[in-house]
Length: 126
Ligand SMILES: [Zn+2]
Ligand SMILES: [Zn+2]
Image (cartoon, rainbow, N blue to C red; front, side, top):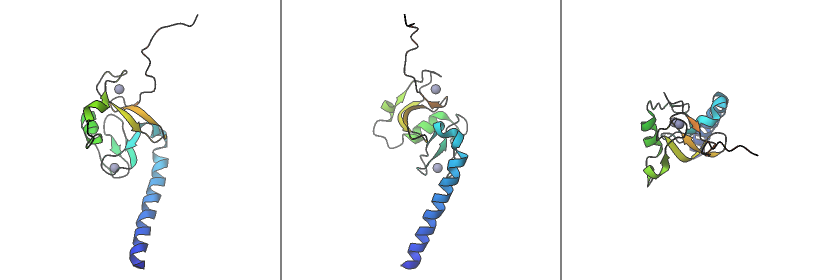
């Protein structure tokens, strides 16, 4: 029993170390880092091209495949996808937690969080 427990501790330590190192690697990409659909770590950097998970190495080369994979198992995946106001593609997924700690509407196409839902109104304050 003791031996098994030590093994598990080792695995946990290994995962912790790896995640800590990842935080450094992903530092500049926090806004574009989402949960990997394969390993479920907050380690997949959406760049619109390779969309690579820096934890398990998953690579998803098309935006649509990534969205399908990301929403796999969701009861109503279609209802989660919106058209992006920036790139006009149906590549925005609602309520995506990103590595900054926020939960945002996230465009996998641009890619990045859609922060401003305004309609580009040109109203000028009087
Ligand atoms: Zn992964
Ligand atoms: Zn977009």
